[in-house]
Length: 193
Image (cartoon, rainbow, N blue to C red; front, side, top):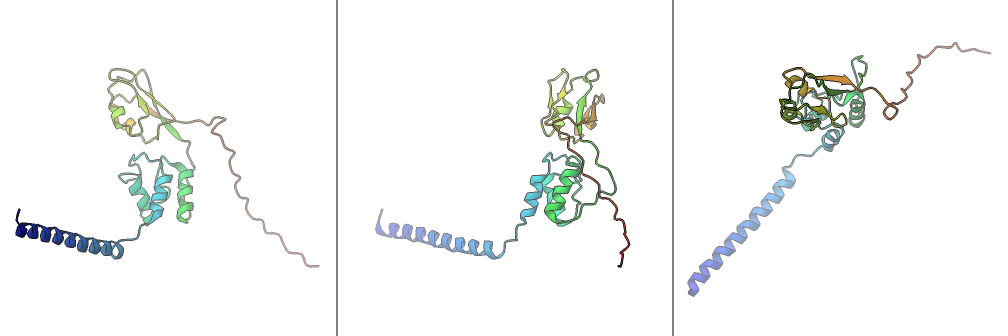
């Protein structure tokens, strides 16, 4: 290789190096001044939600629902599987007042397979986002209650209506003493002596 070829190669490498450095500086400045602020509350709210991505709230997944709750497009009580306790934690995190529209908190539910009706079609297994349904083709299925998010997608998918949602009754391990309801304030007359 002659000296002119080496000179041209060195100039090309130098030009690419300078171009890479200039573009790196431009991208660094642009990322600093053109970036949008990240709201960490959306990630915190998403961590409070069950993570089942069941779409019962009207959003594609729990991260989209969390972003909508932070933006005010969805109420903190928008997540049915989360229940009132999750709604209260989300409202506390966002600093808003929780309005449950006068509805009482229902008992948590879980999917249940009626063995006599199950034909083993595996449609429910493919629809379950939490892998709570156990079974094989042409075999009876069952639901692992501790893994079930109660999204109800398996109920809609079952062709024989073998899956129903049953309330989870409290046990000694899950029962909590209910909080007392506030008493109405009674006006007492002031006495002057």
